Image 1 (tube, rainbow, N blue to C red):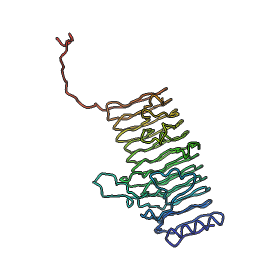
Image 2 (cartoon, helix red, strand yellow):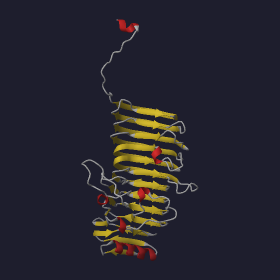
Image 3 (cartoon, rainbow, N blue to C red):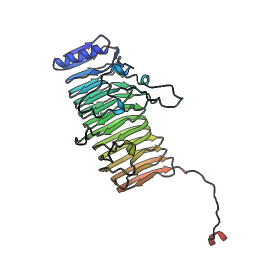
Image 4 (cartoon, rainbow, N blue to C red):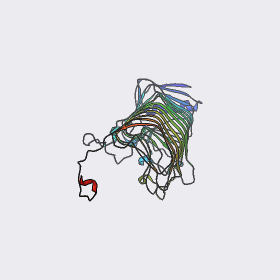
Length: 391
């Protein structure tokens, strides 16, 4: 069943989605124009087509949005918000397609009365996510622009067989916590041929544990042919209290950011009563053009944190221009294993290209970097009894 929505409001879009789902599935298409909306629930076997010239425009009022409530998610509410614009749970064969746009009007959620060059201030009220999908299968996003999400643009949780192609995520970089795609505890995800501009991380792999007894695994993720523009990190992998993240490839990437690729495990991200749990393995980054103001690659485990493992992480074919060194640093309780730096070239403005600690099996092959000279210091002579000083 196919329906074209002509009345331009979110209620009409929701009505059309529900009718098509009740009929067994089909496509809901929007006529060109603006559709003011709040939460829209997507259903199994329904494609929402937003063609060029059509725009879903999210309300700037948080109370207009529904809370995404489910026993499987109730223990976790990132940024203190359960609000979202596109919502979907326990569904299959769902698609959002077309050349149109979804505008979350993100800046209207923030306090923008800040000095020039500063990020907007976080408001006391919850900020919506653009798309939240939970336990869904066979999901497709293609061609649509997702503009100015107030919070995370995508939070994909416990989903399988997700395909993202040729989308554009374009967020005001003065907003904070407006991540691109958070891929959380998902399996078989592909992201390709897409553009990301965010104030926070562009692409994130997570395996957030809902309860201590419920395993969370994020695996089999492929990201390729994408452009990343972030005021924070291009890619982030895991947090210290996450479960298992494995088998992921990030290839053919152009990245312009403050920092490049981060496996960052600081104490401030630990859950209460936890000393660390993450296991990250078999993750590859290849053929990157990476330019960042600070750190291009960072694997770091702060002192006192004991992870189950960070191992078989490969960086190859990386062309780097950065302000600070590459960091590959475990600790006494978490020794990194089998980290490879192959065919790495470029310039680092700092006087050292690489800092490495607590690594078993660090492979460096074809490492060609030019560093800065460091800070100039005046010669200071001190009294000495050495015979060398007598000449």
